[in-house]
Image 1 (tube, rainbow, N blue to C red):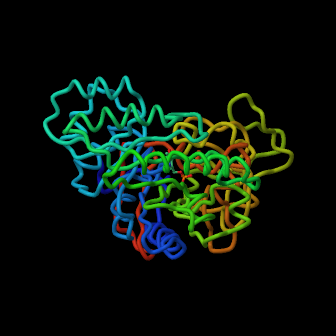
Image 2: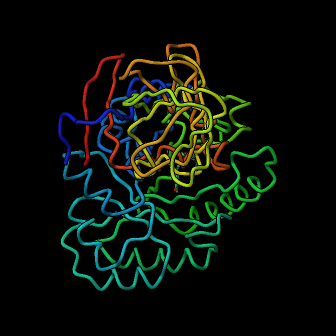
Length: 386
Ligand SMILES: *Cc1c(COP(=O)(O)O)cnc(C)c1O
C-alpha cells in the first residue's frame, strides 16, 4: 500500500535526479553497445523498487534485476513491462508464474532443470545460466555441467536460453589477482559455449565495481546496483572515482521535544548517559524500529549545520541528542545527507561507524519510514508503506 501522505516527523528523501545522473555517468563510461540492468532487489536497496525501476528505465537502463520472484511479480503487477531477471533461486513449482509474466529466471542446477522440464509450461520460460567463476555461491562451475544444462534446455521447446552470466567477488578491491582468475574462467566457459551453442545468447558480467572500473571488458550488459544509488562499492573505488556519483538517499527527522537538564541527570534506558553540566537535550521521533539501530548510540547527527551526538540508548521509536543550545521545536535533524549545504553525514560514514558496508545502511531503514521522492528539487511522490 502506498498513500500520498504521512503523519510523523521522520522521513527518507530519495533524489531521482541523482539516480538519473549516476546512470548517465555510467553510460558515458561504458562502450555504446553495452546495456544496463538496473538492480532493484531488496526494494531497490531500500530506496523504493517501483520508483527506482521507473526512473532507471527512463534514464536508459534496458532491463531490471531482482533477487526474488516476489520482487519481479510486484514490478510486473505495477505495469512495468521491461525485461526482468530474477538472479536468485526460484522454487521449480513456481516457475509457471514467471513464464506467464515473462520474467526471466536463473538456471544452474540439473535437478532444478529436470523438475522444470516435467512441467507443462503454458508459454516460453526465459533462462539465464549462472556461472560460478569463483564467487562460490550459485552457478555451474565446469563445461561438463554446462553441457548437461544446455542439453536439458535444447530438448524442451518451452525453454529459451536468453543469457549467461557470472558475478565477481573482488572487483572492488585493490588486488585484482582473483578478479583475473574469475575473468580467465569466464573466458574458458565462453569459449566452450561458443563451440557447443549456436543460438544467440546475451552475456552479462559486471556489477557496479567491474562496470565502472573495467568498462572495456564488459560484454552485452552490466548489472548496476549500489552506484546507481550514488555510493561507491568500496573505499578503493571511491578513491579511484572512475565516474562521478551523486548520493540519492538522505534521512531526516525533527526535534519534537527540547529541554534543559541540570548536571547529573540521566538519559534513556539503562541510564547510560549522565549530563556533565546544564545541558540542552532534544528528542526525535525515530528509533531502532525504523532501522536506526542501537549500535548508533554516540553517532553524530546534524542540527542547524552542526554535528551533535546521540546520547543514551536508542529506543524503539525515539532517541535523544545533546544540543549545544536551545532550538525551536520542529527544527530539522539530518541523520544522513546534507544540512544547510554546509555539513554532510554520508551513508559511508554511518557504515564506518557500524563497521559495515554502505549497502547495508539504506536497506536497514525500515518500511516504517516514509520515502519522499524528489526530481530537480521538487517532490514528485510520497510513499508511506506503513
Ligand atoms: C546485487 C547484485 C548485483 C549488483 O551489485 P552492486 O555491487 O550493487 O552493483 C549484481 N549482480 C548480482 C548477481 C547481484 O546479486
